[in-house]
Length: 122
Image (cartoon, rainbow, N blue to C red):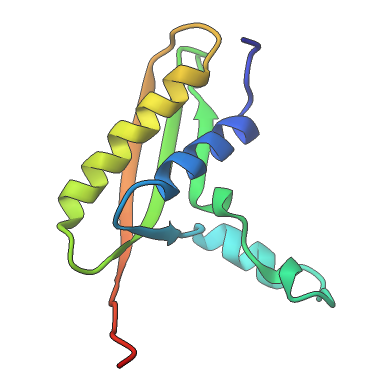
């Protein structure tokens, strides 16, 4: 395996999080949302979509001793947020460790930003 950067790790984390049952999406940080709002207007509707990686912050520890991963996600109503957050934490940690070239410490923080109600369309 080769060394990986924050962009690669963010993609791996986003994929792992979105595969967890009960997760409806990733929530970008306020700074990312403001930057997207200040960006020039685009003509395509597809270009206005926020990439899932926007809800992930991956950075190396200042001393290079490991990775700090922050995940901000929205959950579906009907499941215990604590259970889903624990599942997200475990899957993210496993996914990141499996993509690293050498074993390194990985710290994962999961923040639930909202719970999305599910309504029947009957």
